Amino acid sequence: MSISTIKRLAIILLATSLSSTAWAEPPRGPGWKEGRPGHGPAFNPGPRHGHGLPNFAREVWIGSTLYFLAAGTYYAWNANQQRYVVVQPPPVPATVSSQTYDVIAYPARGQTVEQQGQDRYECHKWAVSQSGFDPATANTAPPVTSSEYYRRALTACLTGRGYSVN
Image (cartoon, rainbow, N blue to C red; front, side, top):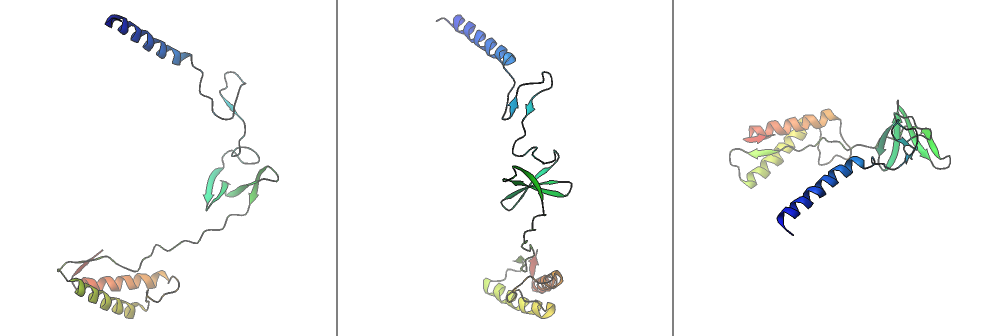
């Protein structure tokens, strides 16, 4: 084949592929059904639409359970009735406190590892005496004020000993 023939074939293939996309049917996803010309696609109610569920309901996952929430009302799928039913609000999962008792301290004056350990221990003891809270012996989460006071005391002590605390 000559180069001019190859060029002509390439142009014909390109023109054919471009024009074929204009003749292609619109994409039709799951639930598509024919009907109502000029009104666009019509979808069958799927497992997340209809069946007693308001159209404006939002999907909410709590743990591994799927709920739908609409205007403050929770809905869940009832397999026996084959529909969504109103349910009690789900239990709020217990949250783990993001409060940490430790602080990040950089030895700004070049303290040795041994000195850092000693300073941290002594500052911990002082912070416990000031706050009345010892994170090493706590079995439950303390009131926020106690843990915050402990952190502030620990920070003040370490800063006074030459650490940059964040």
